[in-house]
Length: 456
Image (cartoon, rainbow, N blue to C red; front, side, top):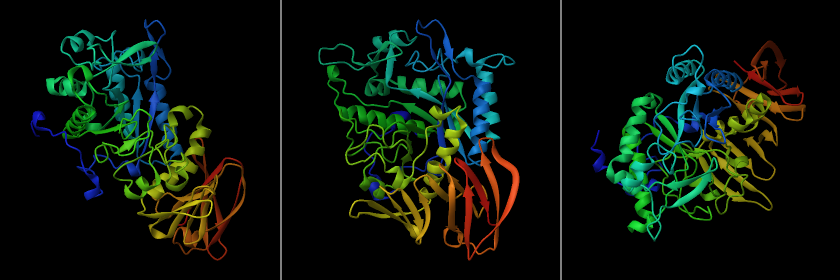
């Protein structure tokens, strides 16, 4: 492993290879990621307001795994530290003891229990942290002020960046924190506390860059330091996921993001049409494309390319998780496995063309393969090869009778298939056989009803 002081901060030109700077630890284009919001501080900061403890988190992980047919997943815990979400940054180094299970000695024991148990349900557990915010009530506040690690305004005053949990947040100076060794110090300490190297991933919230004006540091100084930080995490064997791709423009119209090829997944994945075609999903992908939209992004490009659902807000409503999985997550996983060839604007719509004869439309929200319809709105059939080769999920939000050409969609030549209902508790026990008519399956679905089709 190289000396941290030798890590470069230069811009990575992903356009030369269409690949990340170094292979990611996880392939996020083939996984689902979500957050579990566990706790936040009480209004007077005297205790933790617990929403989900470790036992509850485990239940959610099992339920989500059942609904998603065992696809590989990553769950990031939010509020695992101190009294919860956004509490005591820039410090990360104390567990939220209010979240522990009664049978465990401490919250760290509960974390380690969840970390191991989640593996049985195709889920990697990691945490949500923040490297940008600093609060006056943090145990590290005096150190960060004394060592000059908070960004400054032109008059030398500390830079305020927002009010969270009712208290003022200040911006950490990435350049000062990196150059001083304090960024490395707090990264190393959290890696000693938690098994992040084994997880291979961490979610860093709000990884914005700001000028440190009072010290004469420009925006590019901050961006370069941020790239050093990302590379150090990767040197440790840990991918960083975050909210955005970060060009850090005030109006959020991010034209040429500075972290492509270093960040594999963004929760608020705002790209324009040209970005989607130019950037393969295994270079960068994400969900929630309608949040703080990039210039040229309609916010509905999920119709063309798929995106991930926000399971954090959907739980504990498992019907929302099921609907999101069937209509969006499966499409995200399917399309990510296909090369994006080109997009074109037709009269009043946009079409995206993929390898293997797959075409999607924006306004009509359709998907087809070699002319065979796979989706129209919330009526959809999508292959699920991670579950079983030759399988697919069929779903309708409103219900109805649907005919799908399985011979064309799934490349199968069979006379009958098996159907097994997929509900909010996962796969049901009942199995039915259905005959095909010249390779076509007609299926009757109730509202919010899903089946898994098995062709072999």
